Image 1 (tube, rainbow, N blue to C red):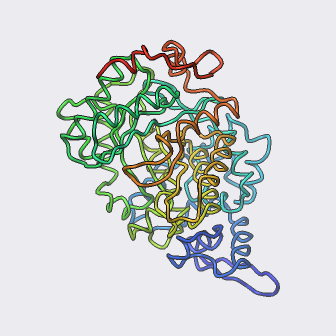
Image 2: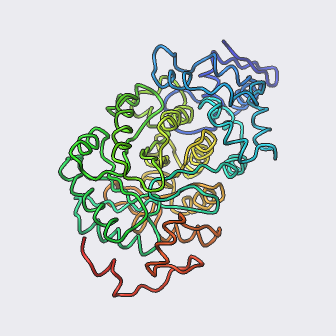
Image 3: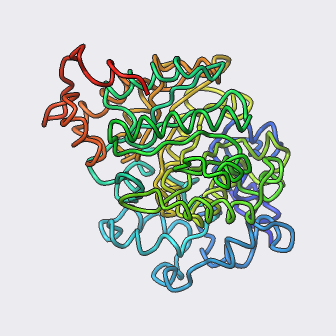
Length: 458
């Protein structure tokens, strides 16, 4: 089906829904690189106006990647909840936007709607919304997940403590972990990106993390972000695995490039659940995504990168994860050129994830060859805090010395909590107070040199 819209006596034609979605996307370098971006600002506006008039039902009948060709498409269609969709089934994309911004769309109604929306519907409405629209709607969405603590409650703001080391040195990693804990970071997860996927190295790190959590009774979860097949092998050897990690994409071809498919993820999720290591819940999966991943893998199938990203959230949603975050500026300026594009993409990702019912976090980050700096990240950090983001990263000095990119620091987490009146996860907050790390108001207390975290080895 083709789509048309006329501006100033010029009729713009879009051959199919995939093309219309791409042309309506706010400009970013990745879509231009892929050759799917609008050719002019006027064409983009025409596409957005045209998209606003598309009935939501269209997305159930016209797939951007054919059902027969792509298992992600099949997952989206086969798991669509028609009953949840019923309240908005007569809406156009524009009418959905208006309703989302109304008082009628409250926390409860958005939770009920989530399984009735497809990623393409959410991507479409995102494309016709301003940044402030994305923020206020996401703020209304509370998505809670549980493993050893509770993430995503209103008024809470969590962090992944990210103690990466370029040689996986356990002493260096341990120093970063202690540093982060003493700054109140780590309630989302203590998560290490290993420099190697070697099973013995990953196993060593997992045992170290498990020993730490047990020794100090820390109510959080650990994760070593190796390939899911490595994690599966370690689970079979009874290595202590909390969260099962994998990077995912929004097309079958992208996931194949990652060495995964839905069957492998199902197996991994079942294996993680079988360990029964959670104490307050059983959300065992951790996913990372990022706009541009399908393009960099040559797996985008002609779909724009924001819609591909939203489709990745359908994969994540199926497995009820404890954590999911977009690593928004990590892939580089070929996909998101500057601070403005990174900020817009992060707000899009957070909005889409929350609206689809995901416990969405964000790695507020950029690479050193992008036209962005820490001031851009400070701006984005505040916007995400206002939007109700579940968690961000806590990296020593905001500089990841293993992955070679710039993220957010333990101090940045404190800044957001203090400025916006937000608190850590409740179980973790109680632990911080019990340890004498923070007081009842959330203020950090002076570090006592006799503190067990500084004194003992694990």
